[in-house]
Length: 189
Image (cartoon, rainbow, N blue to C red):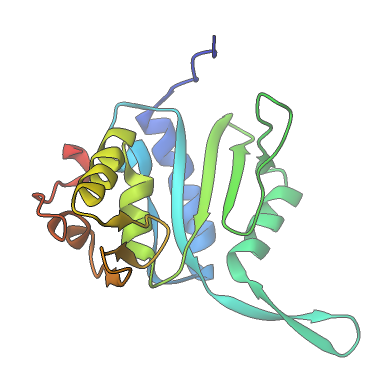
């Protein structure tokens, strides 16, 4: 049996989310940093904080003469790790998830999990709907797409239609309405 996930009061999670967003905002593309998950759905208690973003890129020295392109958010998250504001979260099987797209951390002072999800401009709205959840809403979207002969690509730019062509998503509302579903605000999902 899996142990119950620790829940945290909304107010404490909001304060941590504010701190994280304040640190990351200068590193993100305009209007491409948002708190998703259960906080966005206005739950009284949350298991973790989910932050979705599109990072700016920066050029940093690599040796004496070379420059490499890095994600600005990655540099800030490295700083937050080094200063012990964050720690990499260890799973129940003793592993961490700290890749290019998904980084699972713990806010050291509070013990609240903070999940960072990088995406692209093209996939922004699909990814935002997916990361806002909940799982039941995502299952409904995927099932409705499948019933139409489509595939929902929650981490991609849109749906794949029955002919194999991409149907782009231009807003959160599109994710629902392209499937013939009524749009639901995050707190209604």
